[in-house]
Image (cartoon, rainbow, N blue to C red; front, top):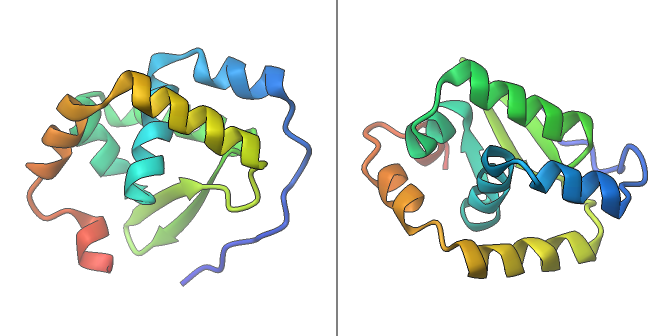
Length: 121
C-alpha cells in the first residue's frame, strides 16, 4: 500500500481554493470527501452520476492544487482531503456543506453495490 505524504506541496492561497470551489463538480467532490473521508473514483462516478473521465479530470485538478491526495489500491484510486490543508479551508468546506446539503448525492452513494471503500475498511 502506498504511504500518504504529509508534507504540504505548496502554499494554497484563497484565490486558488475558491477558484477550485467555483466548479460544481469539484465542490461536490470535496464535500463528499469531507463527510466520507475517502472515496474511490468509481464511488464519485456513481454518487454524482457523471462519467469517469470527467470525474477523474476534476479530481486530478484538485490533486495538482494540493487540495486532495490520491492513493492506488489495486485497481482503485482513492482520494481524500490533503491532511495538511490549512484549517480555514475546512471551515469553508463545512460552511458550504451546511448550505449545499448533498442529501441526494449521499443517497445515491448509499445505494452503490460493492463499494470499494467499504471493502477496504
